[in-house]
Length: 319
Image (cartoon, rainbow, N blue to C red):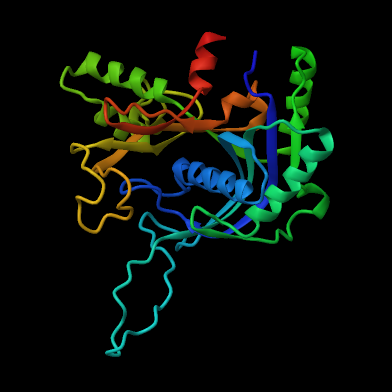
């Protein structure tokens, strides 16, 4: 039985010039932490508008992506703009980020005490607020590719009856096609690590992560005809991608204001590095419940882990 009772769906958003570099080692789609941060900012903006709701989880369905980078060949470069000169007439020392355009649908797990009329008002207000926000550093623009009827924000109250709830989710999944939702596959990384360690006891999770992140070409020679055939080795089905999932502490926690140049001097400070895992892009019609695509904060402060989680693999194995 799904724990999510209500969904806030913001369909077919056009995001221009979003950050395409998700971490020091990955690029191609914004990190899920960018969408979780946007969700938290939206919750605060709704509260400022006297709309008290709780946004706990967020999912993203990507319908289209357009990286602002050169095409063709193995080496690609981002399209960068010419920055204004500084006061000396030289080029300003600005490190510009790689950018991309996105067509996405955002799905939030929302909780609030409201009537049906109030729910649709909240959905419309949320859509109006998001229209003026940044998503992963990008600007929300009018989407001329989709008819206005398909762009209305909507609050979906999921039925308590499991069969009716399943029908509701099936209708939603059809609206999200064509598109792909990003889910977490920690299980694939753990399984592949064990596979490599069975061959080499010195293999690590980093070796498994790198092996799953690249295209591995293998040469096969037919014993009879001696013909050579090259194939891409795919240990698992599906569209697997390397993704950042949060941060891990590399220092103790410092008192507020004790570290120079910290962004917020009112909060404790800690040095961290990115944490990586494996994700999978899946067509929405393969999802069975809202939890499959929703991401949430799952910190372990004692272990120094500040990360996100997604329950797709856990639910798939328990089914």
